[in-house]
Image 1 (tube, rainbow, N blue to C red):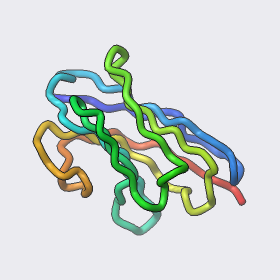
Image 2 (image 1 turned 90 degrees about the horizontal axis):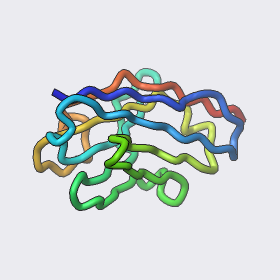
Image 3 (image 1 turned 60 degrees about the vertical axis):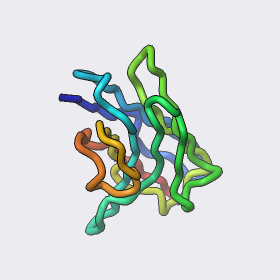
Image 4 (image 1 turned 90 degrees about the vertical axis):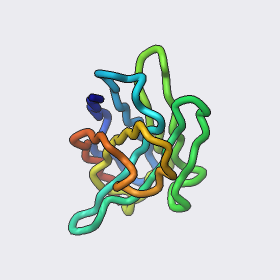
Length: 124
């Protein structure tokens, strides 16, 4: 089993920055890809970014390319999401997710483990 705990959410003005962190514990050797998703009220979770455990290859949603950066620290077992130039439309609950299988990693159904989420609110 893998446990995920997010932190770093909060309230920020448009144009500002936040850094989200996801601490991975448990059988950390099991995960193949880590992802960040977000969920708007009344909407399905949507893909934000992902990173490969071994390859470190990163993927981003078009809406965040150039503004968000996903990274990992294997020594600390963390996966971070640096969010710059935040916009009001980035307001959502952000979730960290992990999967231990070879999957595309673009959709929530690809992932086996989830954190509880952290709220990000961007004021305009």
